[in-house]
Image (cartoon, rainbow, N blue to C red; front, side, top):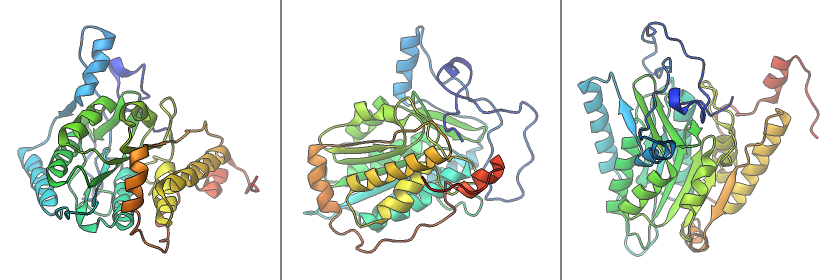
Length: 346
């Protein structure tokens, strides 16, 4: 499934919008852990008298909430504050990793992926007490602060005040739909926003977070590479700046990129760069078998990052853990839908 589906109206030239019903809102789901569906068009969050000004306005990381009760807002604020307060402090004299895994869309595949990404990255970087997961209900649970643009910004600010910028590392994993403007925040019919490359860079800089591992799983996420690459940054994206990524069907446990990188490659006791290459090959094979236009995942690791990556990866588990959940790429199901038999490996 193409992951570039977000904003309507003036943004239509940049984004693909899903088929949306304009009928009355559906009845509340029987399952309290079922997330809200998207039924209304994504509003235009930009402003400006010219197209250039309109595009620049997204660098402010616009966010819109509507129809949320004060009680719901307060409950999420309490959850987020408690989760931030529970993060363990950094340890002087050593490089500590702080992990943030965030699902920015209410489609449950992203919540499932963010939860498991938090576990895998916490184990890999010895950050079990310094891991924050921001994810909504996934059909089975609703036990974390929900992801949003403002929740991400607050988390980065909080972690920036906890770390020693000369020693510690932020490991950020985001999963959502994406656009050529940046990462899309889309919560049912009540929450909308965009995290732009310039906006994310500004938030990290203002928080004083210099050492960064940024793993961005979304369509067009390659737009972040030229803006955020630097000597102390390792950035991995699910797609090139002009390409879609795949696997975001709501009932999935993983997107293609999340399954390949988090669920397979980063469970292995290998360096980040080798894991990125392995994941890229897996994604390319799945896309070729499904006859999809290659997403072309990107990786850029700065010279300074190579040094401190070795330090924070020194304590990674020596034995690989097993993948979990349903595979993002199921060739048997794909062939069944197409009315074909199994296909031999190339």
